[in-house]
Each structure stands twice: as structure tokens, then as C-alpha cells.
Image: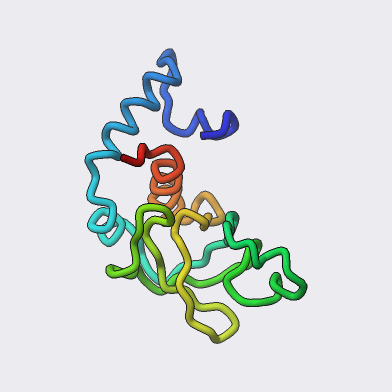
Length: 132
């Protein structure tokens, strides 16, 4: 987690590393698919803030839907679309097209949106999880 986001889960007088470790323990026990189904309200808008695809650097790739920096509408979770390296996938709509995007690449704006915290928790957990 970046230093700018550390304050999101820590109370007054609590060491940041201890509070983060406690939160990670909670998240490690969580059934993310079930929890997200219970805590997200579809549809909602997101922006793609991450993209591992090397094709992004090819000419014209940024104009294709579902790319880095694009705003899209999430329609639902894909139960069958989860893998160890890219996490849970979501069904998204952009420019009339339907596609599938890793939830860990997305951010909800503004922070006041009720879907902000569930997506943020998943993103932070996913980025910091241990892969065995």
C-alpha cells in the first residue's frame, strides 16, 4: 500500500504496520466473491487505473475499450472468471461493448460512492496478498 493511502485503515495512536497486518489477516479469511456480491451495488462507474497488457503500448491500443484510463460501467462479477495472477474479473460495458476486466485494475470515483470502499479493500488486499 502506498504511503498516501496508509491512513485509510489506521486509528489514532496505532502503529501503521500492526494495523495493516490486522487488516490483512481479516482479508485473508474473507471469501471475496461472496463478500463482494453482498457489498457491491451494480451497475456503477469505474476508471481503469492499472493495465498489465503490453499491447497498451502499441499504436492505437489506447483507443480500444476497457483500456488504461478509460471509464466504464460495471455490470456484475464473473463467477467463472478468477485466477491467481489477475484476481476476480468483472463484466464491464464501454462504448456499447461488453468485456471482462480484472477488478484489481479498477478504481471507483468519487470516494463518496458506496462502492468505493469494497473495491478499495479488494484492490489493497489483492496487491498485498501472499501467493503460495
